[in-house]
Image (cartoon, rainbow, N blue to C red; front, side, top):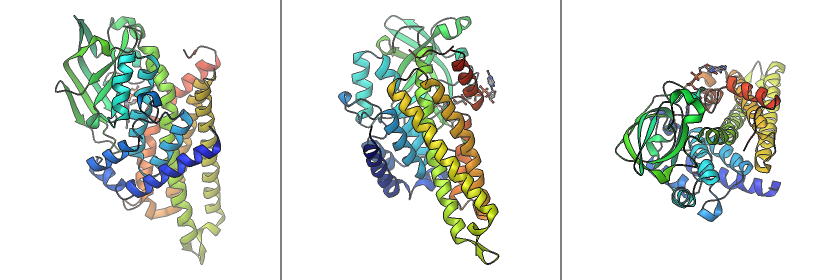
Length: 380
Ligand SMILES: Cc1cc2nc3c(=O)[nH]c(=O)nc-3n(C[C@H](O)[C@H](O)[C@H](O)COP(=O)(O)OP(=O)(O)OC[C@H]3O[C@@H](n4cnc5c(N)ncnc54)[C@H](O)[C@@H]3O)c2cc1C
């Protein structure tokens, strides 16, 4: 993609976010929910189906273009940004890449028409240790019967369907006994919203499957061959999740910079004080380096570059950890105002911490980086 196209996407998403999300972002955080009419408008713009190919009616954005769109949504509402990450990238990825023609037509078509998807991997027993998941799917004739508990699932209260990792093999088979199923929302799927510190409104929930009957055709790929598909989904998801952090970094920088030019102390705007200049210059460098490494990871993913998995983890580790640093500095520049519930930076500080945890913690990214350097990771 050329720079002009990227800037056109940035401009149109920024215009939408300023017009439609700026006024409700605080309400989304405080009420821990996105109003129905806002959801509808975001969906109608195609932001919940970013990566759905054009042939299925979606916007067909590249990874890099999706990053720019998610960055701009997150600059105003990181809750909506992370919802777009999951429904627009992590949900369509395994269906588009590994699903049957029928699955693609049905579920990618639904996303393109405004449905919302969730990606359900984590369980109370295990997040980093994804090969240990316990949600069972037993074949009974032409249907799987699914029972188990997923937790911290983004989008769950709004989702029309769940791309779900299930155990179809024996627990001791670990990653060799896992499959990926698409499960429609129905009464056997019980969703309970959780009270989280940040990304409030994105619907982080516990999801219980109580003997849900799922047609065999809803299997993505082969039985017991789901784990690699989950890992591949996370490789792209780490890039699009990091885009939410980049949007938060941009917002925190703008807020602190403007404040530093207006607030005075000892007779001058605080930006004239050298120690404030240290913080502001450090934030500017972090913001630009985060953007560079993230865009580079996205470009490599789009090109199918052999080392894009390492770049994806390096970008996520860098953007998450340095993003937390940047928002802490922004709060420092703003003094007591920054620490107040009235300030935007207070929400950004709560939100950005999640990126060091979700989609693989910082520690897991370090593990992936070293495994990749040792030649032990081969994307399919
Ligand atoms: C807001 C939010 C939204 C989320 N959305 C989703 C979602 O949509 N779908 C979904 O499936 N999940 C989701 N998650 C879950 C998230 O992916 C997990 O929380 C994350 O993978 C960590 O798993 P855990 O919480 O079980 O921590 P654990 O795996 O128990 O880790 C605890 C600590 O131990 C460390 N650790 C664990 N294993 C190792 C190791 N081998 N080497 C070094 N250190 C290790 C971790 O780094 C961490 O510091 C979400 C989480 C949050 C907070």
